[in-house]
Amino acid sequence: MHVPWMTPLSNAPDDRPDPGRAMPCTAHAGAEWMAQLTERLAQAPARGELSLVYQPLVDTRTFRLQGVEALLRWTDAQIGPVPPAEFIPLAERTGLIHTLGKWVLQRACAEFARSLPRVEQPVFLSVNVSVRQLEDPSFPLIVADALARASLPPEQLHLEITESSWAERWDVLQRSLSKLRELGVQFSLDDFGSGYSSLSVFRRLPLDMVKLDREFAHELEGERDPIVRAVVTLAHALRRRVVAEGVETAVQANTLCLLGCDMLQGYWVSPPAPARQLREWLARPARIAPADPVRSGRQRWRRIQRKH
Ligand code: C2E
Ligand code: MG
Ligand code: MG
Image (cartoon, rainbow, N blue to C red; front, side, top):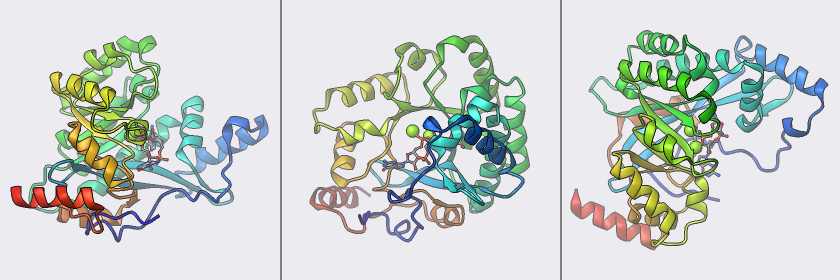
């Protein structure tokens, strides 16, 4: 499938998973295999097997670049690429997430800061963090250290937190979040609507952004979709911006725009791409034109051109 879009992004190397490739599946693997995989994952940072790819988030109305999300990749020398859906849960279960998470923070801040043009650019970097990382009392220091090493202003860092298993560790998490908040770091609630979707999490956490799970984009029922509209209204009432994740078509993008979403992220905008792409995106964060829009996209594009 050709993903039309963004002139500056259309040449970005495509990082989408290859559906024809057999992936190891940790859910059904035996204990021996899991032990081996854990050992290999523990050695991955030292072996240089980890890397980051980045996916842009754009403003729904202007198509301007707003931020980029860092996504971790692991290519084991023998096994080949292992998907995050396999190794992140493994890292969380075994505690390796602390080492991996620190590596991600340091690398993402460094690569992002290095790619920023000299002129001040209000674009943010989003990094995924696990609840287990937030439970570590030294986590705020790890974040502060990564920011300082990269000379990146804390306001430009967003931490993405998935809403699962909040309730049990509420106190610890709130302490950690308020320390990070004092630093100036911002928070996004990731995959909203995919799991528990507790309204109390939504209300009590110091969130700046809510990311609608990709299921919403894929199961849209047109401009009248009551759930998306209600979530957007609620988020806006609480002064939180809404990102639609997993946007794959112009029709989805248009509908999500009409439903009031503030930002779009997904293959339609651009698949995740290696760090070398960052410099190009950040140097030209201006309006991004769909390369081959379908009719609805073209109408919207004309409206945007008239406005700006
Ligand atoms: P996420 O944070 O919700 O990231 C978005 C996922 O959706 C990414 O999968 C991305 O490649 C994929 N995606 C982007 N656009 C589209 C689209 O249009 N359609 C579809 N079907 N998928 C799209 P990825 O990279 O495989 O990551 C999966 C999950 O692994 C992430 O979900 C995140 O929860 C976790 N993850 C990735 N990197 C890290 C990390 O550094 N730390 C932690 N703790 N978790 C991470
Ligand atoms: Mg995320
Ligand atoms: Mg997500």
